Image (cartoon, rainbow, N blue to C red):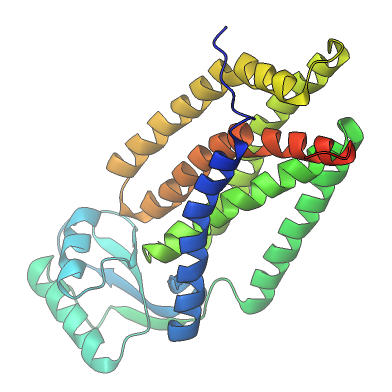
Amino acid sequence: MLKLDIVGKRNIWFALSLLIIIPGIVAMIYHWVTLGSPLNLGIDFTGGNLFNIEFQKDVTVGQIRDTLRDVKLENSVIQLAGNRSMILRTPVLNDKKQAELLTVLSDKVAPFDKAKMRVDKVGPVIGSELARNAILALLVAFILKLIYIAFRFEFKFGISAIIALFHDILVVLGLFSLFWWEIDSSFVAAILTIIGYSINDTIVIFDRIRENMKKRKKGESFEALTNDSIMQTMTRSINTVLTVVFVLVALILFGGANIKYFNLAILIGVISGAYSSIFNASPLWVVFKKMEKGRV
């Protein structure tokens, strides 16, 4: 079996994590101060205009999105209701911008009867109260995970796993803020998916560490035992993450614009989760165990 001193080089892995997380945190603080929001909130959060249009010939989502790009509204939500009907959700538009949008749709996509068109203003799908509830739900989930892992394994395993989960969330949030990618309501679902996936990979490694602790040889260090446990599960971890990554890359390339950032968030989270499970969570447990013994 291949042997790598992953735990012995833990400071390198921790530093790499910080190199990714810190720029993201700085970007969120900068955007919060300058723009009033740490993330590029989509219309699900901010509200906007809702257009219900019936064209005089068949249209496609690709046609409509290419046309919206001309008026810088390509991130709008497009939903076809049949071959000729479209529901379009855009940011809040003034009268001039709305007239420009309707003109370009009529000229470049297909003519439509403006008398039959319906235009409404809609509020945000996710209000501040729901956002607070979502954060509260995440905190409750973290506490329940900590309790379960502490009961099933030990408290130090639980703390290590929760820190690794925070790492994964900060990586996703930081990169989305750094590159100013737009987020919508599906982003919340992506974060919850990442939490569930990442903790699963961490538990597999912790379970192997626990099994090896029962067979621990006299004088064997925590570093050596943890390194062996990580290597014993490495093939499984790599194979699992690659199968997910392949699917997500395909979805990003061919799945359409509406789910692009949802899939991108999960892709970043899955890769980060695999990294944190191997290079952060397990070495952190070793650090806590050595602190317990009075030596770091």
